[in-house]
Amino acid sequence: MAMAAELIGHLKAVLKQQGITYADVAGHLDLSESSVKRLFRDRDMTLTRLDSICALVDIDISELADRTEEHRRNVKELTAEQEELLVGDEQLFLLAAHLIYGWSVEQILNHYTLDQHQTQRHLTTLDKLRIIELLPENRVRILLSPDFEWIKGGPIQTFFETSVQGNFFDSDFSGNGELRLVVNGWMSVQSVNAFHDSMRRLAREFDQHKQFDKHAPADQRKGTTLVMAIRPWALEIFDKYKRAPS
Image (cartoon, rainbow, N blue to C red; front, side, top):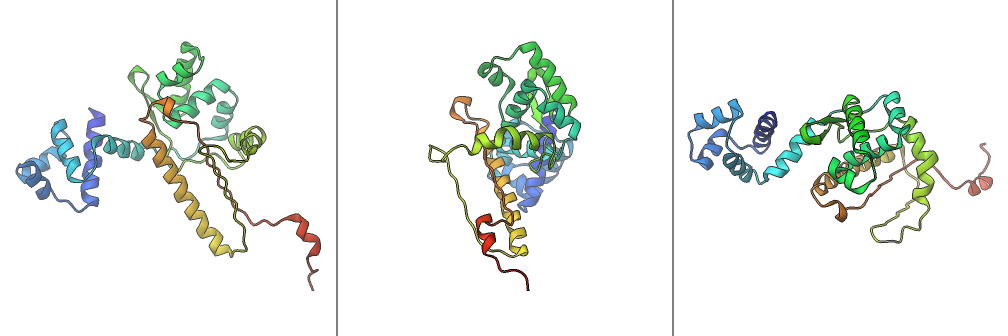
């Protein structure tokens, strides 16, 4: 019931964004405007009416649910202690990572040789850490914001740099689904900062694709990592040719 109320509340926000009035909805549903206002005020309507209003704003119910879910996700950073707890337990880290990737608990247990009782304890831990909200029947709701970031220089980033980064880049990136782009140039500070915004937008687009694909069967998805990095840098072998400052 709470989820239905959230869906209706978010649908109201979508209507406002698109400039669609209660009168427009009333005409679409063949109801009086006061009846439509009551539906949204009480946040109680049939699935058929909800679906019909979704059609009016050109989205389906599953997309509305995804948007509502994304709106609820508001944890933007963990503490160093929370990150340390994750990286210190391989199975807890595996479970957290795959839930964030969009896997269900059932899919994880079918794919990996994890003990079911231990997994249940790990789910409780992730709920306490506010990474997930544990729902009945082991369903989960991810609480991490689309803008979530690991602590700069924290336990997770350190783990990536020492144990993962070398393995990831040990490739010529010529395989199916692989791509490596390297571009160089001399840029102003203003241009570099503007490019940071472009990179963040691309990261959000990656997250949107990830959310869309979470409905696809696990055997049709592959673990995929996108790494973007930019910094003022030039080949050190050129340094010996620099003129000394006058």
